[in-house]
Length: 278
Image (cartoon, rainbow, N blue to C red; front, side, top):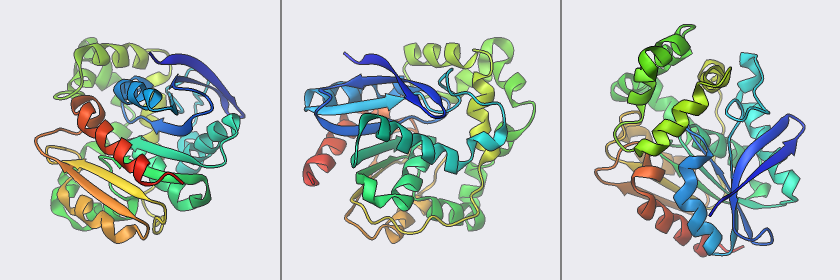
């Protein structure tokens, strides 16, 4: 069973779920949009049982204690800073970093900027950001898949997503996310300012600067039925990782890998950690 804690940082208190002994191997798991730490429930249990100390925070905008109001507060440098602040709170010099969706985007950035802090990187669904940016710029298929971002950046996105008992917000999670998780996410995102905080990740995003090569051991997991990310950037990611690299493609799985294929992802994650003990 995961334990609920709060993590104090200079930016505020992050809500988080943890599992495993505090003296265990530190693993930080970053959720995506529009989810929360609960998306890692299956992985937390297994990692905790494997003598890891697994921590999954509700990220900036999702945690009530870290919900600033300005779009600029959600730029990548702030999100990277949150990861390091959480790690510093626990006294982790080095740790394993796992991210899905937006959490993967942050994880790629942390690994690029602070490789000395990262033992291993596991990115789920979202490719290396330089490969993704190039695909959005040059690949018609990825351009079509990414068109939804403009709608999420609009000033009317909150009203649109929450109308009719959050019908359009709920639609985002299908197929793949269990109903009880959908209810949890929707309830959280109807809290004052929560959905705006989550959408501000899109409004603040600027995929116009290269993050450079990744030197740490990296596992990238992508799924063939991901409507948001096509194969172009997924296959190109290996060109941007100079350290040990493993690419796994899950067949007939949607974007919501941690919840739709938890056993497959957790098995790959554990293999990755065991392959790189130091």
